[in-house]
Image (cartoon, rainbow, N blue to C red; front, side, top):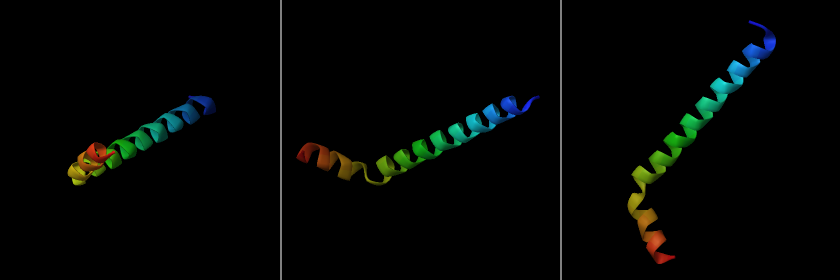
Length: 44
């Protein structure tokens, strides 16, 4: 395995971790304040 392959794998791993964190963050926001989001959505 050369350096470029290793670097690409590392970037892919970081990308997956970032996607996972974003998904978890949005799920937590939706789960903890779903009623507030619906309220503001209907309000605006």
